[in-house]
Amino acid sequence: MAVNLDAPVLVVDDYQTMIRIIRNLLKQLGFNNVEEASDGKEALAKMKLQKFGLVISDWNMEPMTGYELLREVRSDEQLKGTPFIMVTAESKTENVIAAKKAGVNNYIVKPFNAQTLKAKIASVLGDF
Image 1 (cartoon, helix red, strand yellow):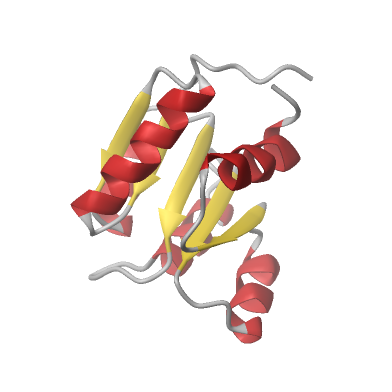
Image 2 (tube, rainbow, N blue to C red):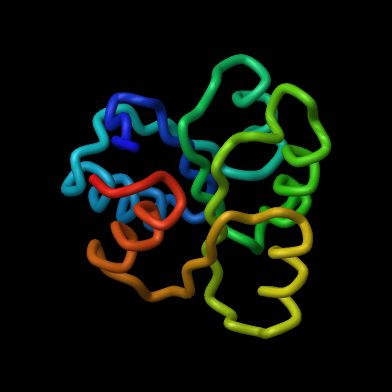
């Protein structure tokens, strides 16, 4: 299965610098259509308006966390099939287990580089 590099990717993080870093890494990997949201609430609103090929979301955000966003997405008939990668600074086992139970496709612990991001995306979407 080939990855559609033109499919929009939604990057969700409350830290603008992190959004910029992920956006640049995605561009290096060939993704041309990158949207952003600063928290889960904004991301969910965008997802209801537009179909995304992938969501890359931070875990810790206010008022809606990435974990809450993931749960909302997985419980929504229209959105539940959206590939979802969680990014976090903490590699706590209970967080990984909770995210897996909630239906996350993959998990990235900060800091990470383009190779790690590519490998995680490839594991979710297929090689590219």
